[in-house]
Length: 160
Image (cartoon, rainbow, N blue to C red; front, side, top):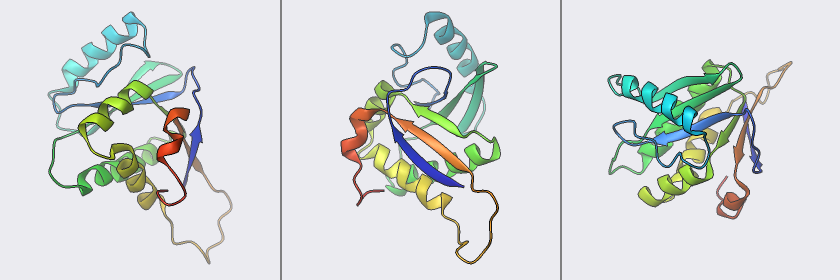
């Protein structure tokens, strides 16, 4: 599987990725969801707080899933890259092919962790690499990551 970055401000029923703190409190949800959706998300997260998983999935509707990633304060720089690798495995295992990142949520995570988005995407890209140069593959699957346009300047050819 390969990772494709799409810099657009798409809205709609795309699967969302939301970053949370150690206690599964989402980082800045208010602008992207309706109040009823926020209420059901918070009820789900109260139950999830008891689980020791780093990545969990919630079906907001039959057509939209929300993936929650627990961010743990760690002094190691590689911990965010490891989360990116785990995210790739999760997306591949659950066959989620089109994910969107929420702008306000990314801004909040970037304020708490230095170069957060760059490190996360680096871990995703590293994990997605396949050593298949000489292997015939009939079908290549892509995971499309929709990142808000305002973050495009953070990524250049050197970073990803």
